[in-house]
Image (tube, rainbow, N blue to C red; front, side):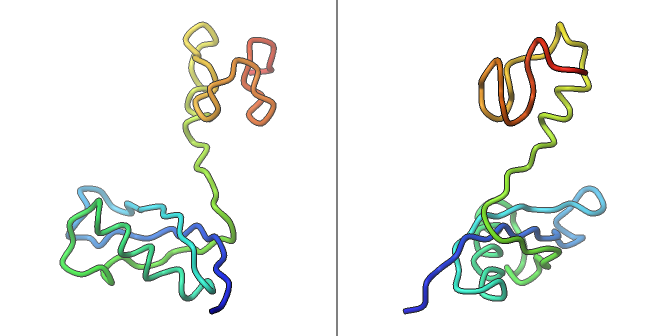
Length: 106
């Protein structure tokens, strides 16, 4: 048995399953190769979004490792400092990863 590696796969939703243009689904999977990571990502997406066929989800990008989407941190940083919560990813007031704290530059 070949070893499995972690991948992050970004899939495009088919037009008929999307209310907006360019909607995507981000999946974390384990597979033997980047090519082998697409099918489990498509099967994962089907569990959350109704489509005619899992293969209707088209791969846009495949990244090594499990990557987290940090856009929530960016959106929180765009709000007024008094409206900001703790780090939305890590839940810490002084997050060393996100630099999101009361003393951080805005």
